[in-house]
Image 1 (cartoon, rainbow, N blue to C red):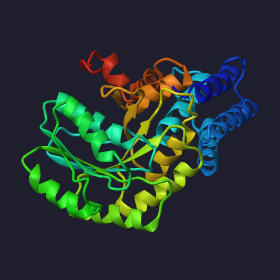
Image 2: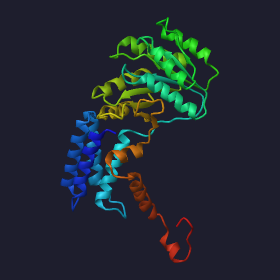
Image 3: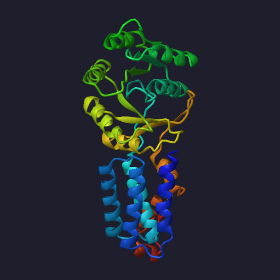
Image 4: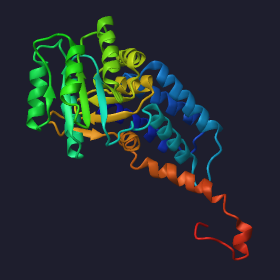
Amino acid sequence: MMDTLSASLKDALKKLAGKAVVDRAAVDELVKNLQRALLSADVNVKLVMDLSKAIRTRSLDEELPKNTNVREHVLRIVYQELVRLVFATADLKLEPQVILMAGLQGSGKTTTTAKIARYFQKKGMKVGVICADTFRPGAYDQLSTLCAKINVPCFGNPTTTDARKIVREGLVAIKDLEVIIVDTQGRHALEPDLIQEIIDLNVITKASHRWLVIDAALGQQASEQARRFHEAIGIDGVIITKMDGTAKGGGAMSAVAETKSGIVFIGAGETIEDLERFDANGFISRLLGMGDLQALAEKVQEAQAATEIDMDAMMKGHFTLRD
């Protein structure tokens, strides 16, 4: 997954691991290597600069936690700042909801809509889909075929180009279902009428969630795309598709930061089952190739908590199970 970025980040951290002493020069070298890796992976320049500043400042200014060495301290900071970059895993509850799908044409939005329907179906929810993509020829046929394979109702009307009308009728037709997913039209660019249409659909559906589908191969333009959709409807989750290819992935990470939302799912395959729930901690640990870095972060927290123990009481024989 994002092999190029992962290899570059691993190399940067290996150089740190080989240092006998981690001083200002070592931190500066690490930050430069991280910058090079992130920029070459199409992560937004401003984002890289903000991340670099946070890592440098924290590494040099924060007091070294007890029971950890300097290298572990810096690794933990890099890990935490990268997790902060992709934010937390987006909220997802198994309850009645309407999900509005957004994204440009070619992002994998229609296929992802069916994958999400399958995800909720496997969780025991009653799911229905509305095809509001009236721009791309064959969109309804593609979505209805995918939904038929998993026995999920798919409402659409290929004889009209009025997406608002389709959605209004669809909400009535499948109103008894628990989860309704609305697939909207995508185009090659963010035209004003596309933005206005999705704003209207957001109002009509009273959507519980508005999820943006981003192709992992999308470069620097991902930030602008995410910003425009976020300003229009308030994106509260991102789905990154095509993570099984040679994509750099930095653009998708930038898009997540732009919307200040979490990643909901990652798509890494063509079948309807190829959708995995995103976990920020596991994702960054795999990206850095450093094993379970969350365990390192927890180790530091435990070391800090140890200072809260009342040693005087323990010396007198008074201590609790927590101590």
